[in-house]
Image 1 (cartoon, protein in one colour):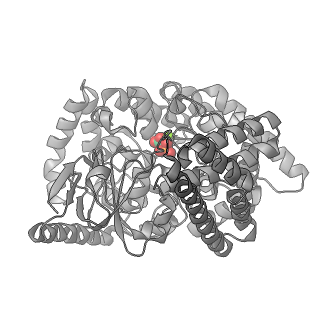
Image 2 (cartoon, rainbow, N blue to C red):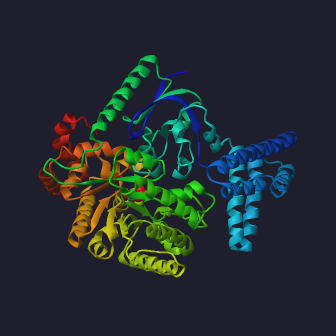
Image 3 (tube, rainbow, N blue to C red):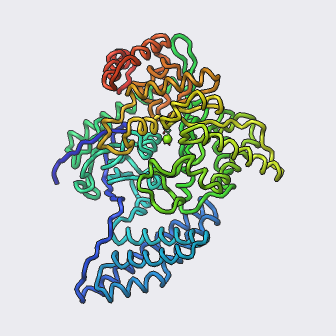
Length: 588
Ligand code: PEP
Ligand code: MG
């Protein structure tokens, strides 16, 4: 064993020391491998072992789902078990291996292509669903054959550092996060959704660790320094001690922030701000409550779809889930964003054919409006919930609005759904706040008009930066170009804040920039009053705000707006704030 390290960039702070679990998740294309005649029986046996392993995994998941989600949901697993054991898969796979002398992966892919084509010819909605189930099971068998048994992560016996090539959010939410000490990823970016989940759960994470999966060995001891963005394989004793002490210091610093928990987020010169939580998974409500937030500024409802995948949530699933969220946050308001599937958050194959450029494709409100039945199911639940709760407590937010028309159509849809519910005897209040996310540059440029129609706005910098600067938020190769302090971004943010103020509506920010200590003084100075962020970031931002002066922040913002490059803005902020950060122990 030898000491080795790889450096990428740290995206969720902290230190993790532990055994590595190495998991490649990117699908491996099945290659056609010719086999010698005497290897055929062995290959068929290997295929059956993979099927059996998938079947026993499905049974275990079924038992778990029965306990946690109820019988109805567990029934999906029963259907999957039947598919996995269906001779309609195993017989033709065996037949191809035998007749063509090829490997099981290749044979399985041929069978899958055939079956999928047959389903497509049937064209019915029922068969479209069966096709999804079939594909799901076939993929599980293929992964098992390729040694990519991702589900094994559900059975972790001890906490580990997960080393992976790529970790899509749909996989991240399925993981037992309490068993994850850290994520060491080859791919990812500072505001990719998996990074956001990691930050919320306080899981140290580094991305851009090229070749980490290749270098790491299963069960090898690693130290992940997510401040510096590096992973060390087989660290020596002195290094382990140094990292342990760094970790202790960090935790002590965090603990010291407890004293600000119940203090108001008010600047030294009396400007009162609101700190809200971004909540993706229900357990984060406890974190939000621990840090005494003023409400939930963003619930990414697509996580319900990811959690339930491959099943789609029913109206009652939605209702129960959101009701629980709202009750646990009461009496504070909860902003629930309608599903923003698509892009990199494709939990369920709602769309059908994969898009060549999904981030510019059918995601957010576009997908909602193109699938009115899915959208209606969610809206009905949200409006019913609003009827159960005191007025204003449930707020509905629309993702990826790119212009006024989309917002108007959505409002109309909400009105129609309200009328439909009332006709069925449900109570729906006259006014359920309907807001728009401003995360597409065109929406930011139309902020004045949007502010006249929306009840509130929320700036989604994660996408706004991605789309304005044409930089994939999850691609570490262009991470240096992903610049929250870019003058174009600052101008758009200012424009939205001013538009909201002119119309007298709330403007919040719910992108990661809202919790970036370097950017917070600038945002305060630009007049932002509602900051929504992952709950773990709340104490630092509260602590910082209490040491800022609004007047000085406004000056900082005015100066920053005169600058022409992101670098100049950043250097100016660092210079202006260095003394303050050192004094109040905030690390950038
Ligand atoms: C954003 O784009 O800033 C945002 C909050 O939405 P998401 O991160 O879910 O895309
Ligand atoms: Mg977004």
